[in-house]
View 1 (cartoon, rainbow, N blue to C red):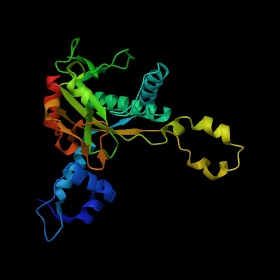
View 2 (cartoon, rainbow, N blue to C red; view 1 turned 180 degrees about the vertical axis):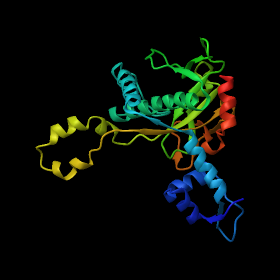
View 3 (cartoon, rainbow, N blue to C red; view 1 turned 120 degrees about the vertical axis):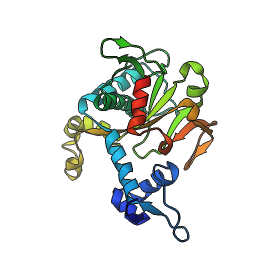
View 4 (cartoon, helix red, strand yellow; view 1 turned 60 degrees about the horizontal axis):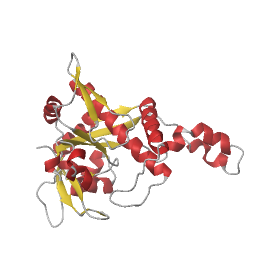
Length: 279
């Protein structure tokens, strides 16, 4: 065991905002506290926190502008085929920017998994970026075994959440309809900027407003889109998901979801090795 840190010291050691630290600690259980010292006080082991931070670094993949372009192309194709994208369990339709962001995030997570498997384990997988009439549940469609391509031995679903997300969340239909269910689910955290559409089209925006009243005040703040980092957080079998009506800070509309805390996902290198071996 290493040096014992207070909560404040632990936050500083990890370089996190306090609310993010609380989210990972209390909601996600990504790292645990030592036994309480005094009323309402937690202490943390420095070595444990370092191992957690090193794990994130190990699982994080950098995605480039070409990866983003591939995902944007898919998102636009989905939009223009008038695919109906409503919020989980509701009839509320998402607006254009939110639809594109959600599709892009989802596809970025898939590319991150593909690159992670190749870089860490030498395993090549093929993703499905085609636009289908019906929902296709499996995200890994082929595996290269060193000699030829073959179908995966298990069904794999890849889901993306927010960069600070602490839960893998799946809708009821994704689990309860057997044809849509995957055997295992991988959770990813693509760190895509909120203003990614502005960044990728920064030249067009600047040209449009360059002669307007306030342009000089913000023109330096319109940044280009560069590298996007994505953590391949971990995975679980569908049977490990919990059926719940809410998670901390969020009650689900129209029923329940199937969830798993990110701290409970399988994520160690040997667990990932076992996973790629069974696909």
